[in-house]
Image (cartoon, rainbow, N blue to C red; front, side):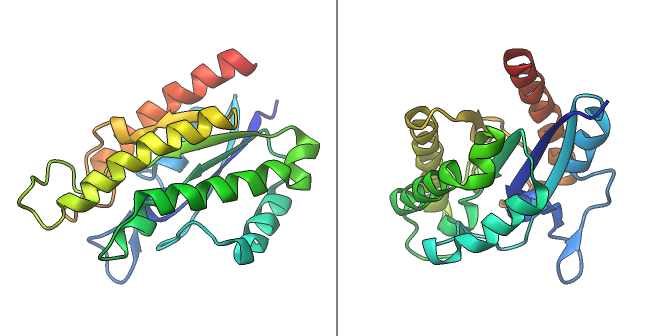
Amino acid sequence: MSGKRILFYGDSNTFGYDPAGYVGGRYPEEVRWVDILRKRLKDIYDVMGRGMNGRTIPSPGSYGTVDRMITGSAPLDYFAIMLGTNDILLTDSPDWGKTAEDMACLILHIIEYQEIKAAGTNIILISPPLLFPGSGESSPFHKYEEQSIMLGEAYRKIAKKYNLISISADKWDIDLAFDGVHISQKGSEEFADKMEKELLKIQEVNG
């Protein structure tokens, strides 16, 4: 019996990027949280991962790439999105408000996209793990931690406003690699454990 089809759309932390690897290395399949979930939940969910290193929230002029990905994976029962980390990280002046605004615009587009409406797809908005957690006020990275905290709060408000499923990975205290940005191998298993619990709860509610 095939399970509910769920697609995780994200950046390097969905791709399974290994910051210790050579030129964009990737964790082995048995370490990547998306693949762990695929194996563990194979009787309940058909899990698909669409992560890409460096991905930011697409602008309205770039929504076509999202549309094509959705169409190519349709029909979907769930569309889960975890983006925003790079939007904050890849600038000297991070702005959680602008990032949240961009996400809200993307969400509105996805809600109205034909394949999403036709399938009655549920949208899951995931607040990404915090950047540089515990960096301390004297650290030059502290502003990124603060911005990622605010982004998580904003995402929960977006989810409530548009009746989305909200998952707060920013509150999970996931183990990160030495760079303070990417999920470590240990953290990937932690992430899979917590996401599995969330997906099982979703299954209980939605059947």
